[in-house]
Image (cartoon, rainbow, N blue to C red; front, side, top):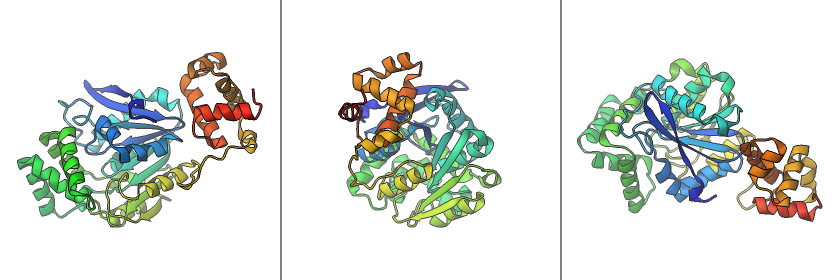
Length: 354
């Protein structure tokens, strides 16, 4: 997957443009709700992209920028309440209906995105089959004492440059000076001072406690023990409020899941989503036994791939959508243990499937 593989789309909500993207293949996994993000800048970050690509091998990963941030409408006011955040997420999921192919979605709610992900799950139980919450909390008032919250808001209001440096120290405790400087620049490019201030006020004002008990989707809660932005105990509290939620404590102090031991976050998440997870050192495992696990439709798709047909040509021949063909090919590669479309075609030739 190359950086240029990401295509940014736009959904509309009450006259506001919401930027979203979809990469990968397979059942949909929606990741979003960060208080500040930028689809394009994030995708240029090698660590972030590698983190997303681990999911994109098994899932269609859908991400979005909240109004006022990133590639979304920068003149729009950010969502100030959970219901407003929910409307944004609903608009993205509806706009990405083709990418979702009518399947239930899995949600990954990280940090302040955990509240809206859990609310979507509670309000739309039939549309969510798995919920993953990472480094999140139930009540924003629990993040810090009132004087500390007021001081943080004050420094952002008076000097966004200084405020972004304070946040960098909080979010990236183990970063180098260069990494902190890059993150400061990233924050200032992804959101204005006014949007950052409004978004942080909304973070502190969140109260997810009324709806967490209504979540019915199987739920995994992940939290790093040394997280300084959102204390470990708050993640444990979230898990305790959701029926039958599984809580996993992870080592490390980085707040963002794509920093530090990002592989442990990906492994726990993929295992929970039912995707095959290989050790990092494991290589492709092609072999005749893989053919026994292919469905009749997958064999048919593989034969046409080996023949040299494109996804569009296969879709037209089999009366499928190109997205469905792409998903079949992703499943074929997983079952055969091959890394690419070309390798799958070569496997079919070697094993006389055409």
